[in-house]
Length: 351
Image 1 (tube, rainbow, N blue to C red):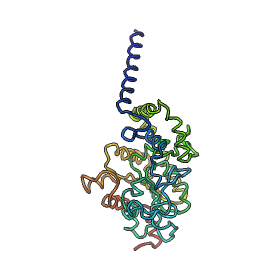
Image 2: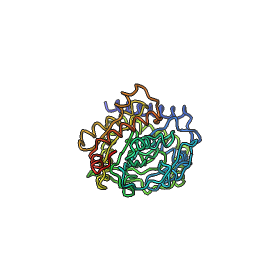
Image 3: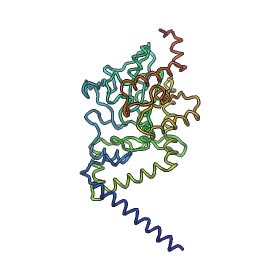
Image 4: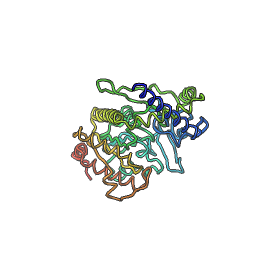
């Protein structure tokens, strides 16, 4: 009997190898080819880091976060993109304004406002709609929630916000599981006691990272290594353990983000931004529901309901003006219900 099972196992391994090699040959993979149509996740990030595919024309290397927008950008992307003296999405420097309710917003490209002008990014729309707000947009394209936490820790003392908003979309949870995305990035893991351990640091600059990866992947077997990594990642993400590990890590990161805000005497709001790029993007909504149930004292907000009630169909991709306005209004309405806002108004800051 054992010989029968051994034979079956051996045949199965041979079939898998044939499929793997055949698929590789069919795709015609070589390091000169473009991988972007077949690679995803961390493997995609490794490839990007190796060939320096990331938008370094508009970003600078950052030693603790991986990358950050270039400083003092004036009218890039056909006049749409402006950044201030620290690389944040504003035409002017962010300075402390004691007479206003300061909101520090952490996020990714949806918050930064990819593909739209500064005034069409949802944080700026929100600040324009409510002139008692001082909104500081620290969103950066491609960030995961781990990089948002690091950004918060490194900047919160500069602005002393009354409120910290962590605005995420579903992929930002997965990005926290990766050591590479647009380039090499920091990654948190969990210690046995549940505390966060920062790994993959110190980060190498892009040139050093690319040279190291090319040395590893530029052999004749390099293309197969890429595809093999992709297969393993795809299989891993189908397993229940991956979802549990991702959500456990994300939960701890968000808890730390709230603790950071509270330690600086600020309020905290977790926002799940709705986007229309497939069912996978509902993962964030499901995560938020579980998180809110387990953390009833944390201010949470999901925006999908408002989007669905406003219109059954929305353009896919980043927010255009209408989507950004809706997101801004939903978040602003939530801010007006927070205890920290009521305290701000009680000090005479009323219209």
